[in-house]
Every structure is written in structure tokens, then in C-alpha cells.
Length: 400
Image (cartoon, rainbow, N blue to C red; front, top):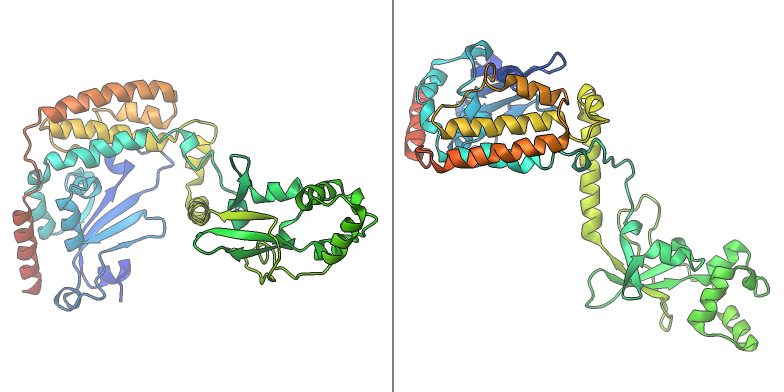
């Protein structure tokens, strides 16, 4: 059974609790949420048994509050995870509670500042800052409509392809009268047949009135190459039989294509290619967007609505780059940005810079960061043996 915040507290398993995020960095605004971090010990039954119910972390619905179990905390520390590293260097004003175990870990915290920090801090910041423009963000690129598999169906057209729904539309045809059947050895490609009988019946189309439906009539003349009036009438009679195809989709809520039983000798009107991977990707992005809408901070959303970058994202990226420079130079990990770059970061959050202006600044900052990294004398990586022995020491103490 997974642990909860309340259970961890009630069983005295919590060994560290602190305020993290913008309040810790000194760049919070009046609208900023207060986020909490923590470290806890797994109960003995989780670490001495098979660990089937081991709880690596607990977090709130919006991930404002996150507590890590000690083993998971050490695993992330070994990888120089910025969030975990920062927790060992936060200002005293942000510490709510710390046990002797955490004090012991903190006494060795400088050992965890190595060249491994450069990519998690600086590398991540550089990659993210170039994605901060609003066009790459959900803010100005909403996904309000979930598409159906039909939007990911194509057919051959000239030397390329076109969406099947448009191909049908210009010919006076409809997706719900189509019938699909798989083509051997061609994954994702289907033969597309058409139920002209059902179409004629539903629209009340007779042989005499067919010419009034110009798009359909033009397609039939070209596709079947029927010119003689006698052959034309014979064709109409033969194709007025309702086939009962199920359409490209069985209904509007379908998440997959619908296949139909096709009689031998029927001729497809075209071949259809279905981009299933594209549809799956769309569904994932759509669900992510809906989750973001549900959980987004409305104040942050409104503040960025008319801008071309997410100010909080941009602020965090600049902060990480500067902290990477300080770590590389041997200045340590300084969480509180007061008296360093706090005003600059708050000005970014307040949208006092244009995006292009910030891009010029970030290029200069990257040059500075690369130079600091190149001349750094920090150890190459965290001493895993030391970290493992420290964890074992704490576990022995816990077991008693």
C-alpha cells in the first residue's frame, strides 16, 4: 500500500520538510504558490521485504508538494538532479524541519557539486530557453478540438497525397458510405469502396436526376468511363444495390477505422493510407493540453496570454544558467538569488524584456557559462561509493 502525506507524518517517517521554488530563490511574487519539499524514510516492511509496495515519492495533485523517500533521494542526488541538490543548500528561512539524518547529509553537501551538475543545470536551461517562445507553448497553441482518425487518413493524389475527406468532398462523396478492407502486406493501407446504392437511396437520386448532382456525376463519368447511355443506365441499376458498408468510422466517437465486408469483384474508388502514429501522437498531446487547462495557474495564464514567451519558464532558465556558472567557478550552489540576479529575474517574470532581447542576453550568458565549465576544477562526478555507504549507515541506524 502506497504511503500518504498524513501517514508519513503520523508514523514519524518525515526527516526533512522545507519550502522550495520561487520563495526559496527569493523571486516569488504576491501570486506565487508556496511549494513544499520533503524527505522521508520508508517503513521497515518496505525496505526489508520484497519492496512490492515501496513508495519512492508522494506528491500532491498539482505536484506543488513533493516528498522523496531516502533511497530515491540519494539516487537523484547521484545524478546531480537540480531539485534534489538545491534542497541541501536552501536558506535557513525555508527549513521547516530537519532531523539529524539530514544534518549529517548536509555536512557533506559540497561533495555533490561536481562536473555532473553542468548538464542538469546549464544544458537543460539552454535547451528550454529556446522553447520558451509562446508559439511552442500551450498558451497560444490551444488544442480545443480532439480530432478523429478520419483527419489522419490520406489517399494518393498526383505525386503526393491529400486528406481522404477532401478527396471525397470534391467528388460529392461521403465518408459514411465508404467501406474499407485491409490490403495484404501493406500495413496501414486499405482498399476504399463506396456504397453508391445507399448514397442514391438516402439522397433520393434516380437515374434521371443523377446529372443534377454535378460533382458526383462528373466523378462517375471519369471513374467508370461510361459514355453510352445504355451502358450508363445499366451501370446505375447495378450500383443501386445497397452494400451496407460501415463507413470509414463507425461513429463520430470511434478511435479506430471500421472495416467492412466487401463482395468479390467490387472495385475500390481509391486506396487509403492511415497514419495511426500521427493520430496516437495527437491524442497524447490533446490529453496533455486538457490536463494543463485543468491544472494551470489562472493568474500565470492571464499574465502570459498576450506575450510571446512564458515569463516563468524564461526566468527559471536564466536562473539555472547563472547557478551553473557559479557552481563551475567553485562559488557553490546559491539558492537565494537576493543581491545576485534577483532583480533581473523578477524583471523577466514581469515581462519587461522582449523575447529577442532575452535571446541576445542568453547567447552572451552561454558563452560565459561555457568558459566557466571549460576551466572548472570540480571533481568529475559524485563519489557513488561514499553516497552508498552513507545510505547504508542511515539504514542501519533506522533498523537499530
